Length: 224
Image 1 (spheres, rainbow, N blue to C red):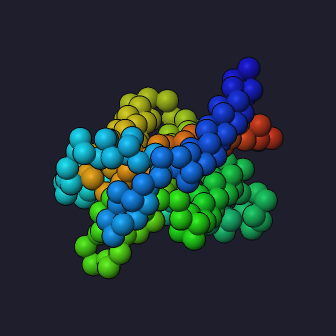
Image 2: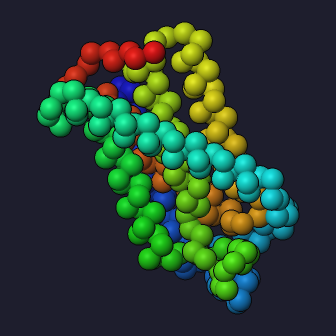
C-alpha cells in the first residue's frame, strides 16, 4: 500500500506542478516585476512578497544549505566511484547509488530546462546583474529539497539504526524546512517560485522512494 501511495503522491504533485505553471503563465499576469517584467498570479505573489523584506542573512544561509547539498552529491558520487573501482562493473554498484545518481541527473536537467523556458522573473535585480533573472522554480528550493530528501532516505539504508542516523535525519529535515522558509522570506523569489520548487521535489522524491522500494536488491548496506 505504501508503494501505491508513493506513486499517487508523485502523480498528484506532478499534476499540481503542471497546473501551477499554466496558472503562472496565463492567470492574473501583470507587470509588477522590476524592469516591467510581467508576473503570473500577480496579486498573490505581490501580497506575499510585500509581507517580507530582503534578508541577506536568510539569503546567505540558504546558500550554505546549497553547499551542503553539493557535498551530499559529491559524497554519493565518491561512494559510487569507490564501489565501481572495487567491483570492476557498473552493474555491481549498489542499485540505490545508481538510482540516486539518476535522480541527480534528472534534477540538473530540470534546472537547465527552466533556465531556457522562463516562467517567471525574480522580484529583484540581483547584484551584478543588469536585468531580472528567471526565478521559477526556485532552484535552491528544488535542488536542496530533492538532494537532502534523498539523503534522508539513503540514511535509512547506509547508517545503522541509532543516534547517528537520527541526528543525520534531523539535520536533513532542518535544512529542508530552513531552505523553504529562508528562500521565501529572503525576498529574491515570488511565492509561486518556492511552491514550484517544493512541488517538483515532492514529485521526484516520491517516485524515487517508489523506485527504492522496488529494487531487486533488498539487502541492507550499513556503512556507519
